[in-house]
Length: 107
Image 1 (cartoon, rainbow, N blue to C red):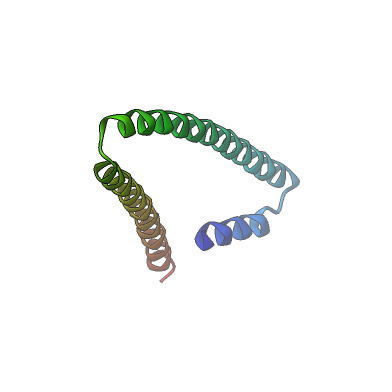
Image 2: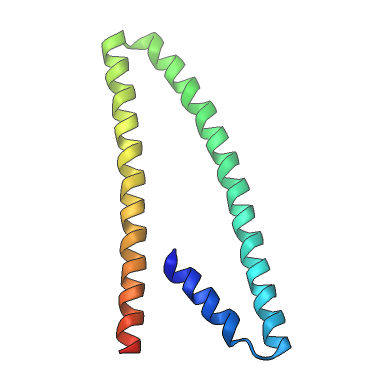
């Protein structure tokens, strides 16, 4: 995220013409609106997933014994944690690659 922030600051200081500044503000507003829409969609998806997950858990608790159901829930928690960690690591790798490319470009 630091790289993106630096890029925005660099862009702000390089907008010398009022028209460039206006276009830059329009782009930032469009990005913000898109991110807000994505956030709302993600919240809706999470709500639906949580609702379906509770329905599935309720059904499975009726078919599985307590120990097996507890292992299933532990498996789901672990899987979710690993997916989140994997995405986080991929984002870090991408940002580091962008930083490295920027460093090579300036050198």
